[in-house]
Image (tube, rainbow, N blue to C red; front, side, top):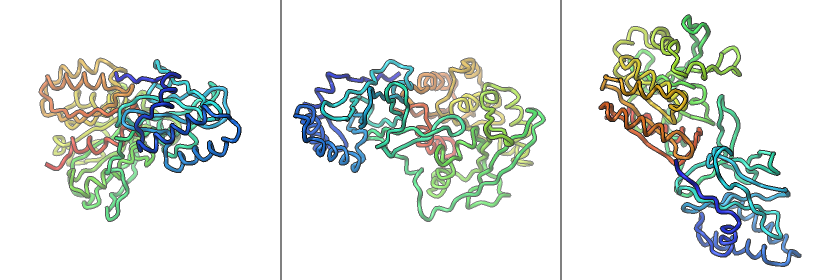
Length: 404
């Protein structure tokens, strides 16, 4: 697990004396000299200068300040204490000195940290030890949590970039989405799903099919935004044309009820639902001919489910997409990996290194490598967040369905 250093008051003082690198070295040096001046001057008459300093940070999107592997969290306001929690400290569950220091003679609070230069991290500010808020002066946000959850503020380190596949592009024709429901006798309830059809194909065309768990989240523009990724990759001919089936884990009659914890815990009935009901409903008579190109994709528990489906039924699913897999939740998945004899499986897997599941993912990568199974694996300095997963969707898709 990657460790992060969180210098306290001593490093804060050093920062005021010796500028570190930021978005712009000269700008950061100037900003820190000004903070030092605020802290050491007579408090009378500096309010205007403090306002100017803060407004300049906001105008230049320098809240937080960043450079290379350095980040400085900032907050301005009256408080008895200010601290920060997020991916970098397991949202408060991991050792981390996250308490800010108030700059003397001001109402500015500061917390210097060291992170990987390409990190993207979710966080919130904690005021007075109890009130969790979004960073009011950082416009960058990422929604996270089961079912879409709520927004967190985002820290973008200097080397981080949004993947081009997520950008809105002119002259890219969008695929179509069709909503369907199936009344499952195996599960004993109704399941909703949406099918993505590429723009340049007709519904009757036989195409590879990728099934996606937590489909509503992968579709949500605030979360996975997967249709945009598909549209862009197909327009650039970076992946082959394919249909994608987004399976919703929520009760279609009551969307506040999410069944994923039961469905995605190595559930034999859930696998049987796919094999005996969903696949025939989606693919019809072409089901048998698509077995060599059929895929399954999921994140967290969905990543665990993807591995389970592939290891148990490689005859049905031989292209396995796994993002930040919750292998720790059902460690027997590793034994299943050791027992797989089908070498035709193709796995594309990603994980974050910031209190995400990279340790378990790397272990799985080692096991399937020994089994002679093709597995592409990518780590990123991020946490267990949709900001991580959506930015690597193109890597997953190209790994499974790249134009060859």
